[in-house]
Structure formats: structure tokens, C-alpha cells
Image 1 (cartoon, rainbow over the protein chains, first blue to last red):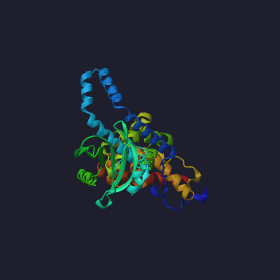
Image 2 (cartoon, rainbow over the protein chains, first blue to last red):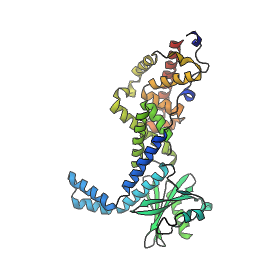
Image 3 (cartoon, rainbow over the protein chains, first blue to last red):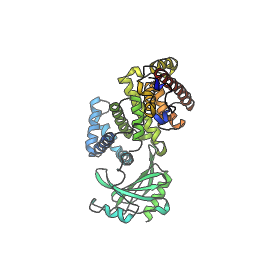
Image 4 (cartoon, chains in turn yellow, brown):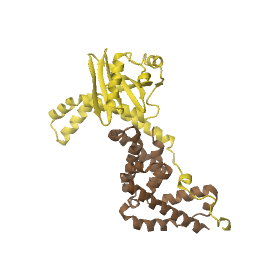
Length: 212
Length: 166
């Protein structure tokens, strides 16, 4: 017992001596899997989800069947915005989820999509204008596989989603839940760009892409 | 996955158990995904840790209600904490650096959770007062006073352990 009378040589300190508990790999995997499962859940066919929603409403007797259906119809746009926001957040939360092909070279990213989609997405780097191409991946929106092209804009991650749609429409800004969305249709494709960057910057990006 | 280590470290210190910490973090991340309204770039860490902290408290209230002490009752807590911390330390505690590690870990584990969490965020996670205030949902002044109280308690607990051992 005597050897210990002077206590430790070094003054104990929380910053140096307390344990930093790092997350175990199993937890990382578990959460990734749950998030992926949640993604699949959200990607279920629209009618199925609406059916469930309407049934739930009818069951608790809060709203009539008609009202539930009406609400669902009015929410098509909202639902897409929600889906896109979720896809954006998921891509940032799960490591390795943002890009399946990582490159700042459009001639690497664009061919990667070949054979994976039934259309050719537009992939253009705008590094000189402040939007640096970061890569791409497949995602699932509006009941179909879509192209997700990612950009870095200063410290922000930007997701650009593309899938086929008829008609033309000018870029339009929507803001929800702290995110900005700009959507437009051009040349047979529907575009949605989403980020926590300023809406005006996303509009500028839409103009760059439309003019390219 | 951003901030997973920070989330786990906070939950592990608050629940003091590997398994419970994993469950809490998993639940917090799923909640975060659903209610991401508040998440914006640089504020992601305090926002996420805020959800982890809330999930921890909900879990503690359900499973170990005795550990959740209202922070208004701090004065009585002070006495309790010191008396708990004077429990007999093991003889090898006082040797070398690993002794310090054990000493500090044990003393910190025995702090009431309201003090423990601010020490963990400030000293181990190296967060700013502002970030801690955002996570805990309390004013910066309260963060500072709670932190200084927590440091006093911890210091007393460590000194007591040293005294007992010598």
C-alpha cells in the first residue's frame, strides 16, 4: 500500500484520461440497414401508401373516405418534395451512399449510368461556376429509378435528380424544411435539384444546366 | 455516417452501458431521419446530438428513473455525488496513467447524468459552450455554471478517491 502514497505522477484530467467511446462497426451497419429499409418503405407504390392512409383515416373515423382521397390527391406534389428531401438526407447520412461513382470528370460519370437506366441523364461539370461535379448514383423516386448527380457547392452537397418527363417548364423554387428545391422540365427530362444552399444559387445552377 | 462516434460517445456516457447506448443511438438516428426539419449543414452536429440526448433521457426515465434528477435539486445532488464518489477504490487505481484513466472514468460515471453530460460534451467531445447550449436546450450561462459545478464535483470525487487509496 505504501508505494501509492504520492498518487499518480500526472494530474488526472478528463480530456486526456476519460474514455472516448467510438461507435462499434456493428452499430454503423445496423443503422445503415435500417435507413436503407426505411428508403425501400418510402419507395413503395403510391397507391399502396394512400390506401393505407385512407384506411387509417376511415378506421379512426376522423375523416370520411372521400376527404382522405381528396387530401391524397392534393398532396402529389408535396409527396414528391418529401421523397426528394428524404433521398437527399439519406444520401448524406449513410457513408458511401452519396456516390456510387466518384469523379469530377463528366466523361467518367456519364458513361457510368449507361445500361443502368432507360434514359441518358445530363451530366455536366460547372466547376468554374462554383458547382463542382462530385459523382453519381442511382436512386428511386416517384416509383421509378432515377439518376442522381451530385455536386459540391462551397460547403454544401447538392443532389440533382433526373428522370424522363414530357413537356417544358421554367425553373421554379420551392423551400421546405430548411432545404431549397428547384424543379424544371427540359428536353424530355424532369430535373429536381436539392440542397441546403441558398435557393438563388440553385436557380443559378438550373440556368447553367439549361443553357449547357 | 456523420457524427456517429460523437452520438455514441454521448449515449455511452449517459447510459453507462454498451448495449443500451447502441439501442439509443439507433433509435435517435431513425428519429433524426424522420424529423430532419431542423438540420442544416454546420448545425447538424448539435441538432443530431440534441436528438441523441433527448432519446437518452427518455430511455433513462423509462428504465432508470432514479438516475434522472431534476437539475433544480442540484444542492442535494452535490452531497450525494460526493458521498457516492468516496466509495472504496481498488488499490491499483493509483498506478501510472492507466490508473488515471480508471480513476477519471469511474469518477465521471458516478456524477449525476445532468453534470456528466456537460462534462462529456465539453471535455471529451470538445464542443463549444454555444453548441452545448443548443444540444441541451439551456442558456449559455447555465451551461457555464453547470459545467463549473460539474468540474468541482468531479475534482472532489477524484481527490476523495486518491485520499482513500493512499
